[in-house]
Length: 258
Length: 329
Image (cartoon, rainbow over all chains, first blue to last red; front, side, top):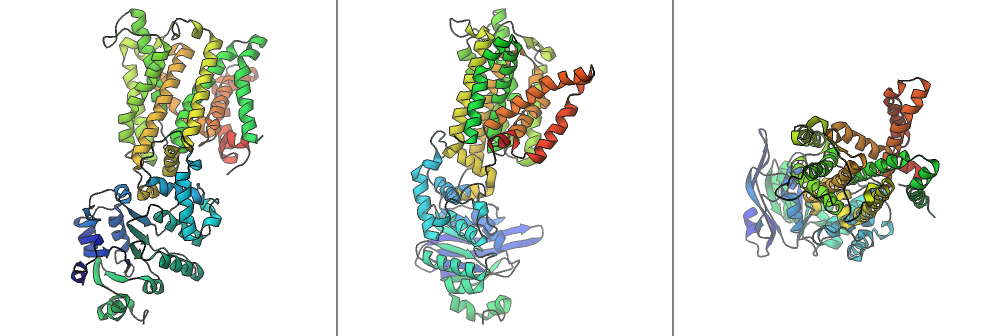
């Protein structure tokens, strides 16, 4: 089914080929291939232990694969460290909320804006009054609906708000690919619904690879879904195709998505 | 006026008036004590830039103070013996020697930082300590410059065509001016884009990398800047005490600097100044008081310091400055 993807006409924002990552005897990623087409919202699902976290580590640059390659924007980034990939436009959010707790919400986003505004060897001007950081940061907060909380410390946010901020920081640099690691993790039904709406509003403007446990959210949002089982891509296709794929049902979905 | 601002003004007033009061009391010794406090405040502020703002617990910061002091000492030896150094005549001009001390300390910090910053946490503490000890033993081995005993200086560095620095009060005010200038620059720096990267890396380094910051580069820059300021403090220390010796680089001196920062308040600029004043004043007067109670008891003054530190860490987590400036987040 991966071969079908390669034949598609739209360019791939991200292309993973024959990726392998072993921890001792265990192959957490076992010959995985995957392509994310520019503009799509591509979801990655799989049971616990399927290797989702390990894959994200390798995509973002925190883990070095043992074999295979990762291409991002037509460039081999397999050996590039995380910060270089981020500078190229690969933004990520974290499964466990990862913010700057002692900074305000606005300054959290301003930090993300600053990351994409050239080098930071600027020692004199007050960054807090720099509109080149503040204005874009405010615009992103507006986009995710957090404007009212701009001046609150990030550590004081409710869980759902922290997830929104996490997303805002990933969005700040106009990324070429957004890697979302379980954005709904720990959210209640209401917070999840808000996040789904938010992601829906982003669809088409940003290329997204979404790793998520919440099946309702995945099937509601994804253009395409890849099912990961034991470190391999078991199937890739539209939500409808995945839903009716017998191998997928066997391996993973069970009665859940019926 | 806000409380921190008021406290800063009081501190500045005390700093400006100290020599006047000392003269009025007929106690010129207080000017020398004040100079020492200012010099250590400068070193402590530089340590806090990396420790409090950057989260880098360097246990070898005194090494950079020592390197700065040795620049003064080495040049003094060559100037007094009329021997050239690296083919050049050794100068005693403060406007050259002091920046040179900062530059040499910064230069030493580049390889040390490059290697140390490959680690974080306890390994970082240990590796900075190890480098400082290496420099300590290097200095004890410099027989031409006093070895273990160090070098006594006959006079201070000079300003061009002016013997003014020889005067203790003038030297005090020059040191005060340098400290204030460094504090102003540091105040700008921690609020600048660079400062944000530094503070962000302390808050959440992994996130900084995921955002695209080459964090190590910025941390190294901060490490080198802090070393430069420490080197300048070392040059001033040599001039204040008219002595340069390996004990300036001893690990316990690095510990003293950490105590000053923690005591005064990490991650603030005024804190290390307050901490340096508090520690040196305790060191000066507690032994005296204890000797009054029983002669010889003053030797054990750290028995008093220990509980004081303990209480502060337990009850004033943001240090003396946090307590002075009132609670703020």
